[in-house]
Every structure is written in structure tokens, then in C-alpha cells.
Length: 327
Image (tube, rainbow, N blue to C red; front, side, top):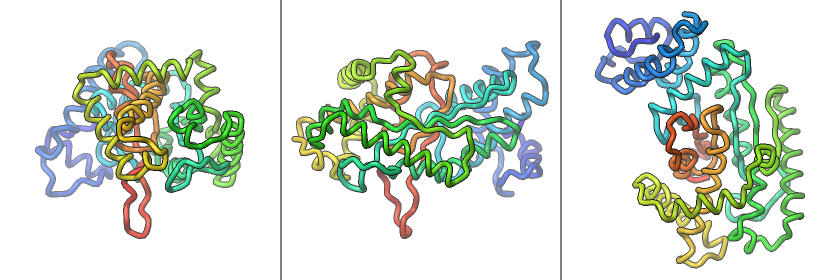
């Protein structure tokens, strides 16, 4: 396994091609060492004698080390619970290696909203384009070690149930779903134009939940109540951060919300993340191109660490040397 705990190990990593400064010593890699030790103890040691080869261990640990040293361009990994997310990531990669089943990336994207406001279009949305731009780099970090990757993009047509949004849009649910359906077609066409491969698919998030037997509106309501009543510091911090983010962007103004509704609207938005995180569990990887402050919500209500979903946040792209910090 890659060794970040000794000078010899770090020197070897440099020889292997890792971009590690000559001035970096073991003190710079305490977190890296801890993560690799957690992966060894929680993922590899329990599988000793069960058909796991040295090559399997090397491939999986190299993929983890690659992300530790340099997450794929335009992304951050493990913003909620880094050590647990890395451990669960290694478990997913090892199980894929042993079973031959592709590593699955679950990618939620917003409907086709404009830069400001929430009028629903029928093309490829901004977060969808951000994801498509990042996908080659994301998938290559796995495929270069021989892992097959399957990408499932889900257009968030479940926002048809959002009462705050529905009041502002003033269109029927049928019209909303008609437009998101066309966005699915537009995104599928864009995937083909970019030659991203047959393993990249796009579909309806609502149909995804229905296929799992998840009642999305009911689940979202239950999670929103849990978020609003939670005394957990991380939950409260995330709720306040997303609220402030939406205020700065003027999103609540676009929805014509009164200030007393801000926290409730943010809680329902976070609850949507929690529904998806609960559905995915610890069996797949989420790639999220939406608001960074909301990423914790995929996992922050989970009691079982094995169900924590490894998550990549897809960062906004630079425009004219300025960074759009939100959405």
C-alpha cells in the first residue's frame, strides 16, 4: 500500500509519479496516513483469506491515494466525513474489482434553470453541463486501473413537488415534467455528441426513486422535519450555510419568499439531498454539481457509518477569472 508515514514511502510515491514536493515531509501527510491506515484496517484486513489478491489491494489503494493527493480536476472529495468516505470508497472499489460489476457514479443534476431565478427550460441545465465537463476526469481516475465505471445521471424532476418553487413557477406539474423530460432528451444528445460512452446514462430522478419503492414527497417531508428539529451541530451549520448562500444569490427573492420561510425552504432543499443519500447508501458514489454547502446533507442524518455515501463535489467552473461560488 502507498506509504505516507515515512520518508522512504514518500520518496517512493514521488518515484511512482505522485506530484509531491521535495520539501514535503511526513508531517504534511498525517491525514493521508490516517486514511490509508483506516482503509487497511476496515477494508483489506477483514477480507484476508477471501480471495483478495495483492494486486487487488495495490489497485484499490492506488486509486484511494490518487484522490488523496489530488482529487480529479474540478472536484473535492469527502467534504462530510473524509475518513469514512474514503473507507467506503475503497470498499466499493474492492467489491467492484472482485465481482466485475462496474463502479457506479450517481449524479443528481438540477432542471434547466437560468443563472438567476427558477424558470424551467428544456435544455441541458447549468449543473448538467458542469457535470458533463467533469466526467472524463472523474471516470479516468478509476478506469486507468482497469475499473469499469457506470454513470447514472438523474435530472431532479422531483422538484415538481416543491411547494415553494411551484407557487413561483405558476405552471402545472404536467408542464414541469414535460420540460424536464425534454431536458433528459437534450442531455442524452449531449452525452452522445461528447462520445462519453454507453455507460453514461441519463434519466428521471422521480423514476429512479419509484424503482426503489421510495415515496419521495413523504420522505422529503420526514427528513425536512428532522433537519428543522435537529440539535446536531453539523446539521444546524449546514442549514444556516445553505440559507445564507441562497440569500446571497437572491434565490429566495426569486421565489418571493418572506424571511420567516427561509429556513423551512432550505430545510426542504437539504431534505432532497438526504432522500437521495439514503437511497444510495454506501453502495455507490455520488457526484454532486450543486451547492457546496448542501453536500453534507447526503449523509448528515445517517447513524450507520457503513451507509455513508462517498461523495465528490463538482466545483463551479471559472468564468473570466471569477469563480461563481454558488450553483
